[in-house]
Length: 112
View 1: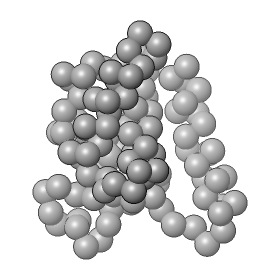
View 2: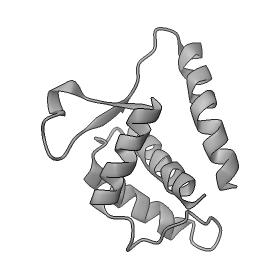
View 3: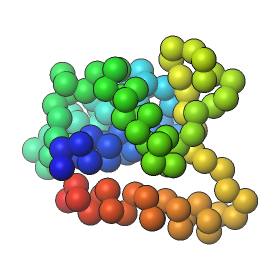
View 4: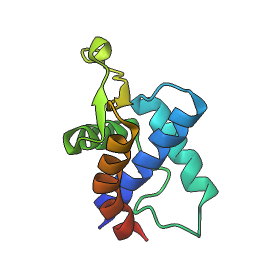
C-alpha cells in the first residue's frame, strides 16, 4: 500500500512539473515531491516523509512508472545519470485519456 502511495506522489509531482513546463528528472521530481509533502501535511498520507523521499528513490519510482507504461524516457538523455522523462504520446487525445484512467485510477483509488 505504501509503495502505491509513493508512486501516486511521484506521478503528482511529474504532472505538476509538466504543468509548469519544467523538465522531469529525478532531482526535479524529488524537489516537487518535497513541496507536495509539505503542502499536504496532515491531510494526505503519502506513505513517506520528506527526508525519506530521495533522488535515488525518485529514480526507482520513475523507472517503475516507465515499466507501467505511464512515462517513457527521452531517448536522447537515456544514457545520462540525470535521466529525463516525458509522458507517452498518443495520436488521439482520447487514447491518452483512456490509458491514463486505466493505469492511474486504480493507483489513486488505493491512495485515498
